[in-house]
Length: 169
Image 1 (cartoon, one colour):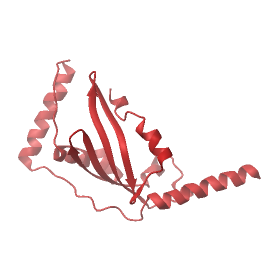
Image 2 (cartoon, rainbow, N blue to C red):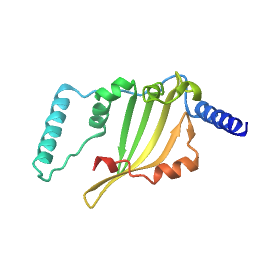
Image 3 (cartoon, rainbow, N blue to C red):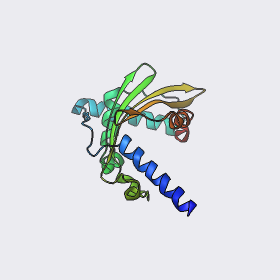
């Protein structure tokens, strides 16, 4: 009986957090599309970088916020999810806004009905620190706000400690 009550309390807490940090409507996030000439130049730049990587040749890839936005929003995986993203670059920080339907979690096996997020959206803003150290890409999360509220510090402490680009290397 105690285990059942404990599980019920955990599920209720998760449902409460889901209501606090999600919305029943997607956020209105501007979608960026590059003009044809810029899209072509972006494609050439990325292809040249990929070829240099294949040949083990040192290469540098510099992207603008518009190029990153266009690449993310045109990604087949991201389009399949039905999400929207818009990033802005400010020095060594990247700020981003995202709106993603949480129903995609159901496809990954998450019990969205049980946690009360079916038909809801994660509408958030985040700030990331980006850098290179000894040839390694470093991306750390600094701040996350969802549905107008900052994530709890216990969650943020864990998120801040992870290099989000670790698997990219």
